[in-house]
Amino acid sequence: ENGSAAAIPIDPRFDIAYVTPVTIGTPPQTLYLDFDTGSSDLWVFSSHTPESQVRGQRIYSPEKSSTAKLLAGHTWSILYGDGSGSLGNVYTDNFTVGGVTVTSQAVQTAQQVSYSFTSQSEIHGLVGLGFSTLNTVFPNGQLTFFDNAKSTLDSPVFTADLKWKKEGTYDFGFIDETKYTGEITYLPVQTDPGYWTFTSSGYAVGDGAFHPASIVGIADTGTSLTYLPAEVVTSYWGQVDGAVDSDYYGGYVFPCSSKLPSFTFGVGPANITIPASYINYAQITEGSPVCFGGLQSSSWLGVNIWGDVALKAAFVVFNGANPPTIGWAKK
Ligand SMILES: CSC[C@H](NC(=O)[C@H](Cc1ccccc1)OC(=O)N1CCC(N)CC1)C(=O)N[C@@H](CC1CCCCC1)[C@@H](O)Cn1ccccc1=O
Image: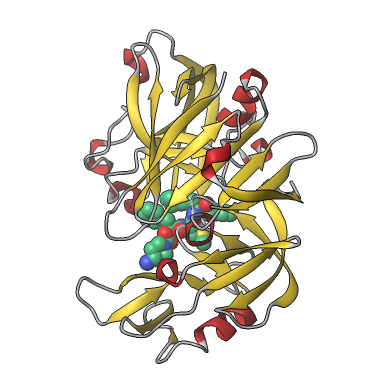
């Protein structure tokens, strides 16, 4: 059956990440996890995480769940693009999101987490919604929550309706027509190596001319910003007074008082426009006159990433049919 769950920004000042309530085990233990279409491990802070590495996060205690089963001899270890990471062992247990239950979901319990996770008390773990081929559990890779839930959903889809500085939703199994306007444009997805990879048909800066281009990138709910080819972001920031690509700050920064253009990207014959306000990501530090851009260069990454700055401008359908496709609609 279908389900719907909140996507809650973890910081009211700027959208660094969104968390969603889930319950694990019997009796149910509630944690708030970061749903990440850019990875495929479901891992949680747990009773196996050293106390020195836990700072306010809720934890999952398998020993308190009558339905938890250790997946003997299995371990996992993951490293993310921002250098954060975690590792540990694996249980299976009941896992519920917005009313959708998987009875023996692989839940990866952390025995180590990097400092950036320890310091982020609002994120109690991740739910990977990439393709299961990316799962890091060894020796047998595990299925994602979505892959396990698919057969019980009316339709093998989930949708992301992320919002700017507001609570949005993830829906599972159905497409809510009230959440978007016009038509959904579906694009083919390249599932190798396992991200939701699609090709954008080009871009425009503000109300300037549309530049046709093939921009291969991934739709990634777990990434805060949007990272695009250097020539694209150079032409964008070239329109902003005082914008510079700063080694010191690690990306494009600009005077907070400067006016920003919107950014439009092509999805097939259609397009999505990211409002300027979404690209004024945040002040470098509280009260600073220097602001950090929400559009950054992907040249250091080796992959273009349509992160939350882009995704929250659209209603996005992750269609897990065979073959998978990704749908984009205005809202
Ligand atoms: C461009 S890959 C950088 C990206 N991590 C970010 O976007 C973090 C997110 C964050 C959230 C909460 C607190 C701190 C940081 O935020 C920044 O890095 N920020 C935001 C704040 C800005 N001032 C600086 C830049 C990233 O590794 N995502 C992965 C999932 C993340 C990991 C960290 C925890 C939250 C979920 C993942 O999907 C990225 N992936 C995508 C494809 C392949 C491998 C891979 O690993």
